[in-house]
Amino acid sequence: MRTPTKPILSLLFVAGITFLSCKDEVKTTTENTSESRKPNIIYILADDLGYAEVGAYGQEKIETPNIDALAKSGMLFTQHYTSAPVCAPARHMLLTGKHAGHAYIRSNSEWGERGDVWNYRAMAKDSTLEGQGPMPETTITMADKLKEVGYTTGIVGKWGLGAPHTKSVPNDMGFDFFYGYNCQRQAHTYYPLHLYKNRNRVHLANDTIAPNTPLAEGLDPNDEASYADFNLNDYSPDLMFKEITGFVSENNENPFFLYWATPIPHVALQAPKRWVDYYVEKFGTEEPYLAGKKRGSGYFPHKNPHAAYAAMVSYLDENIGKFVQQLKDEGIYDNTLIVFTSDNGPSYAGGADPIYFESAKPFKGEYGRGKGFLYEGGIRVPMIASWPKKIAPGGKSDLISAHYDMLATFAEVSGYETPKDTDGVSILPTLLSKGQQEEHDFLYWEFPSYGGQVAIRMGDWKVVRQNLKNEEAPTLELYNLKTDPTETTNVADDNPEIIEKAAEIFRNERESPALENFKIPLLEKGSLTEK
Image 1: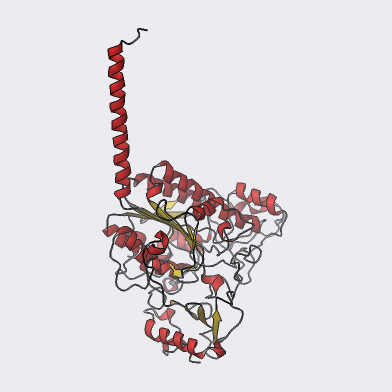
Image 2 (image 1 turned 45 degrees about the horizontal axis):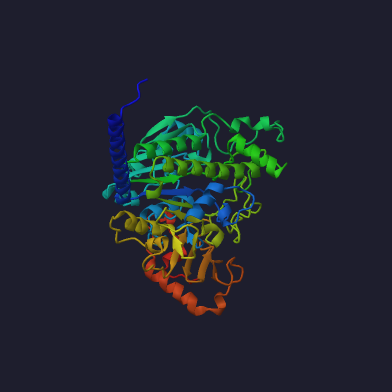
């Protein structure tokens, strides 16, 4: 090989310098473009995940290293609330920025007037039986507003806010892309016959095993082979995660909003075997869950219910770790706000065991105090926000906030105008530790199910009314959450002025629901305290 002469070496040296300079210039330009571009927004909503079911909030049995890492890289909120204690209304109020005194959807509404909507096989044959009661066509969601300012919007997971053949489907409610369950009843199995991609069914390689199918008679509940029917081929969270990664890869050059509405860890207990085996080894032998007929005991049986539940949460955590790595690999992590939270408190049903896992610690998470109820265990949820170079790592905030604050918060992040008929406040000043944080005078909840309930939080005080559909026995309770966070001592009789303050908020802030099935007769009389 001929050795290059000195002039050629000099030329190559100069060319190299020029090449490096161009490369540096391209890199700088890319970085500047990334910094000047609107940030991506990712909102991860777990389903029935209790306040203390991840390590960052004190969980000791279930391992969640990736969610914990999000907390270390960002800010953890200790007083964040769902807008409602069950699926559909929580999601509606999140997307519309309204509290339960103004919201259109105030409970789950399965729209039974259409026919046998709980029949899984009938729904498979007839898509008009799927889905929940629809939102009005005029509903404005945060996805609508983000589209106005140039965002590509996607939802992957569980919708639960309308039905096929209505205008209340994701693609008509501001989302460019949808993949997952339209109907929350269909989401009672992780091996469904189909999911939806935008407006169309995607048929899966699963058999028809309807939710609430018990263990067949004569099978040994201690034999793992007896449960084979409940673990099929296409595991919906795997399919949904594939769509999530695809959505980000396809839209990484422009700002996007991704609403990851994972159905995990809502029962039924169905999880990847490798994770179940991991927790079987960790927890040891346990009593099988047989999915009987008493309250909350349906869904599917499982040989190792504690291991399965923990496996579901750790599987979600694993995917969050993979997802964060993808954002880093694609060079968009630093320009992405990630919010992780849950739609309500922990479930008592289907083999979930909030007592064993201390799922709502320090609050109570069992039936009557967890999901479906307006005590802290049912409505206080984890919330973690991470945004590199914007949110300081390792932060913790005791700001009283709620799901319905996200519409106003994302307005400040992205630049859209917040609709005037919303109830939230932007928490961006707290996230960035910059500027004056507006605080709520109160938070309001109204829930027509589980006996009829209403709750109002004002600073450290919280009023709860239960059993409102039983006019002979409604209960009025008052707790000081600063001194009594687990709501054990009712001090209503000692603080009439606080009760009157709550009654005034009720009179001024509540509107009668538009739908008859959401009305609580006692509240329609216009009084919070009337018996």
